[in-house]
Length: 87
Image (cartoon, rainbow, N blue to C red):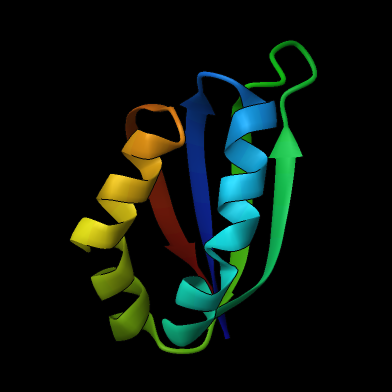
């Protein structure tokens, strides 16, 4: 099974985290589970997120969705995320 690794910076982690957690049902519908969030020690707003990927095609569609783009903008994600898939 693959994993998705996302790296991005947020304006304020305390604002971003509840929104990320609330978006879990949408991620699950895209086959993305077992999310883990890591914060850079030097900058707690610089994040790395890993997710288990059940269906690579669904995961890629999720990444390109308007819903995700709107949620990231609303939650204060700065700039485009770096997204990689690993097996």
